[in-house]
Image (cartoon, rainbow, N blue to C red; front, side, top):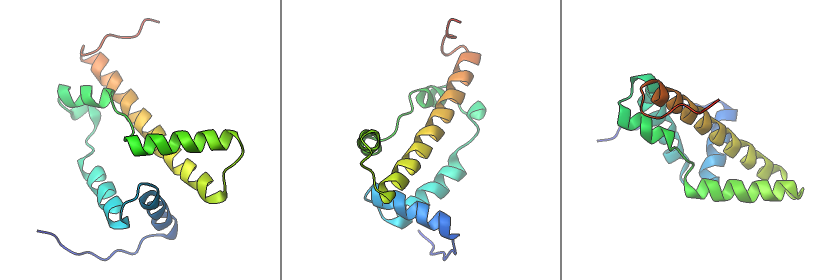
Length: 121
């Protein structure tokens, strides 16, 4: 069962969601639903069971996002990005950074629980 809800989004948020939808070849509604679901289901890593913590330790961007990010980074190094592509690159870098932070937190929890060895210092 679904329920239809009408939202008025701030322009910047709507634009960011639309850019991600375009970039990933999805509907705007699907991107927004993913974000809402992510916000609701993303529990603090410390409260997750061991198997979920370990899964987060191996977190990666999906293959389409990785390919697009690599292509945009290569074109950026060559100075061949337009404004829209620079915006796409910024969005993907934000997704990438957020993933790295989540992965790092998971690794810290995994080490503290003895699920992974600590790195030698």
